[in-house]
Image (cartoon, rainbow, N blue to C red; front, side, top):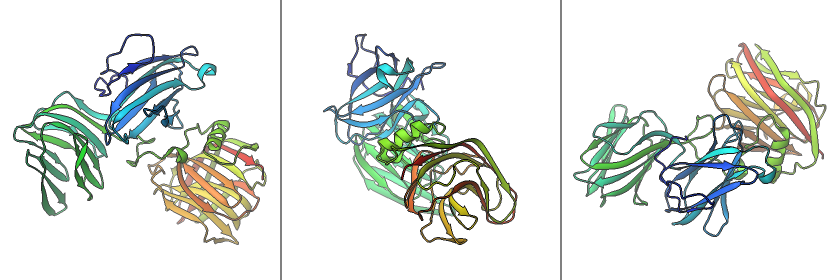
Length: 453
C-alpha cells in the first residue's frame, strides 16, 4: 500500500510544522508520545466513494487510529483495527453526504500513554481499498479487471471522440456522446439491448460493478442504475475516447470472502480474539451490559472428532455451571463429514438439555436450544455471509448471553440475535454431523467471561 502513487486525495491543510507534502503521494506520518496525531483537510463530492488506510511501516509496531470529521469538527467514522488480527486501521467505502471540506486524522492509539510509536503511511483511495489496477492512461483493448469480484472503477475521459465500450464476460456497456447501451448475456440467451439517451461527454466516470447490477456516475451524478444479476469478470476497454487516469478497486473485508459493505460500528468487533479484556472493553463501548464479571475459563486449544450422526459433545472441566457470560472461540473444521457443523455447547444440563453455537462449511450459523432432546422453536439458524465457508477456514465466534437474550458475532460481525431458555449449565466442545462420517474440529483461544447476574 505504501507505493500507491495514484492517490486522488488533494490535501489542502497540513496540521504540522513541516512543509506541505505532495498531494499525489501517500503521507508518511511519524507518531510518537510527543506527536500523537496529524490531520489533513480535503474536499469531497457527494456520491463519491473513498477509503482510507493507516499502515505501520515494515518491522515497526505501531497501533494507529483513523478518524474522519465533518466541516464542523464532528466525528463521522473511527477505526482502530481493520480486523481482529491487525493493528492497522482502515475506513472502508465512505460516501460523503454532501459536497464540502472534511478532515482525516491519523493518531496513536492511547495518545501520550501509548505503548507503541513509529511511522504510519496514511493513504486515501478513490473507491474500495483493495487496488487491482491503476494506470495513467489506457490503450484500446486493455484489460483492466482480471478477476471476478465486485469493483469500483474510476476514470476520466479527456477527449470523448466517438465513444468507448467496456466488454465483460457477461455484459457489454457502450458510451457515445448521445446515449449509453447495455447488453446482458445469459447462458444460451442474448438479452435485449437496453438503450437510453444521455448527454455524456468529457469528465469523470465512476462505475460500481456488483453481482446484482451496475451503477454509473458521471461528474458525481448517477446516470445509469441497472439492477439485474450480472456476471462479474474481466473488463476490457475498446474505442476511440482518450482516457486519463484509471483506478479499479475491490472491497476489502476481512478474509476476502464477501462483497457486502462493511458493518456499521455498532455491529462490528475489532478486538483481538485472544484478548478477553479488549473484547469486553469493546462490548461495553457498544452498549452491552458486561461491566461486571470476570474470566472463569481459558483453554488454548480443544479438539473434537466423531463419526456418529447427530450431536457429539465433549465437556470441558473448567468453567463450571454458568448462565450469563461472553464466550469466545476460534473454530476450524479440519475434516468435514456430511452436513458437519462445529462449535461449542453452553448452559448444558445433560445430553438432552443444552444450547449450542455452531458454524458450518456451507456458510450457516446456528444458535440452537434443545429441551428434552427436542429442538426448541426459539432456535436460530441463518445463512450468514460473515461465515468463512472455505475448507479448513477459521471462524471467530463471540456469543453474549444475558438472561434469555443471545447475541452472536462471527469474524467480528454481528450475525444474529435470538432468545433462548435461561438455565445454568456447563460448557462443551460440540460437533454435529448429518450422516455418519468422520469429522474433526479444532477450537483455539477459548475463553469465558462470566457475567454477574
